[in-house]
Length: 275
Picture 1 (cartoon, rainbow, N blue to C red):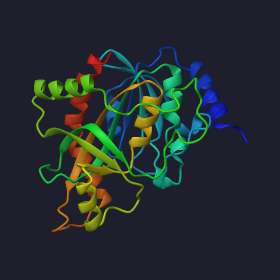
Picture 2 (cartoon, rainbow, N blue to C red):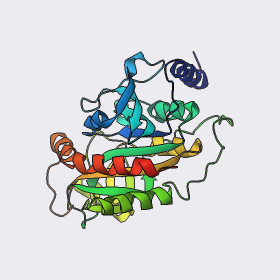
Picture 3 (spheres, helix red, strand yellow):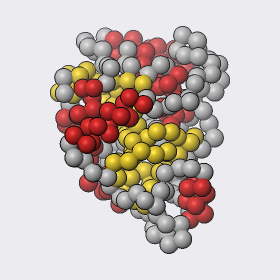
């Protein structure tokens, strides 16, 4: 069986034959946010199915394309859809695209997702700039043999989200008068079942402001690879554990789509300030 390292290297070599310009920043689009790709001045769009060893996205709202091009004059790679632990993938498989693109030369990651609000002060449609996270998946993508060429055995996560980029996001929101933007802590759970009232109460007590089923493995690998990370989470709903309302995936996707114009404007402004 071909090793994980070999799989990554073969995908990197394949992309080197296709890509003329090294992407500086990777943008990973989350649930309901795939339409952002229309803002990219595209040079190349490759379906995940055509990339060596790439997993396949099984979630309908995730298109499954890797796009290379420019956004606001900056070279980017856009992951139009992601993979999730709940789809049956390991966290190594989930993070495969980030590992490949880091070795291709990308130095920044903007990760986006849709989440459920835990902080009672949040409102649906809020954009939460991630300051910290909790990994409640029960698995770490760096478990197993460390490849020293890729990063250190024990990467430091004392500051997982790059503070200057957080400040850039807040300043960009202020510049464009984007309302309902906050900072907070994101917690990643396995899914796919949504939270019970008791779980919601517990996650809130753990210090989380929003909950989702993605992003944290990718952030861990990005930091291991030396990338600077910005996390943007669209809060699609806020539930009070003492007055709980049903959570429907369709409502989450719709809420994310309604917030997309604000997120699009924000990312387009931010991208030109990333180093």
